[in-house]
Image (cartoon, rainbow, N blue to C red):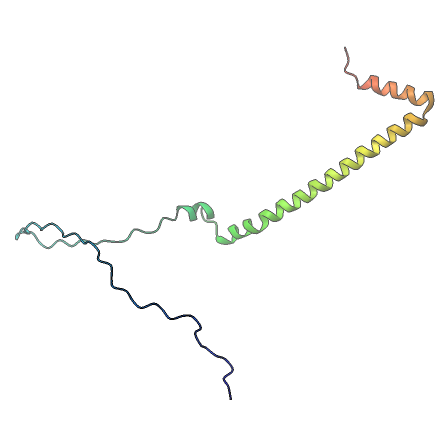
Length: 131
């Protein structure tokens, strides 16, 4: 009975290992003879901790990663909502402007002398005084 899963490696074989590349390693200068009267000096060498300045700037002081994730998630969501509202308001403004223009055009065309007199009154009221 054949096996259900075949775990054969279908990748080509690795190339044979090559000879190591010679590396120039300079010889250290000879050390001065140690003072026999001095004790043994012990030096501790530690690796410096990683710089976390970017992380601190991203997270802020005492702010957790959840806040950063919420900003990443809700930031574009807020921009999309505000854009949608702005588009709605722009459409409403266009509808109001077109409706106003239509009403004014209809009143001018069918309004007789009373409509024209009202229009003159409105135009005079809109002009700045003293000009």
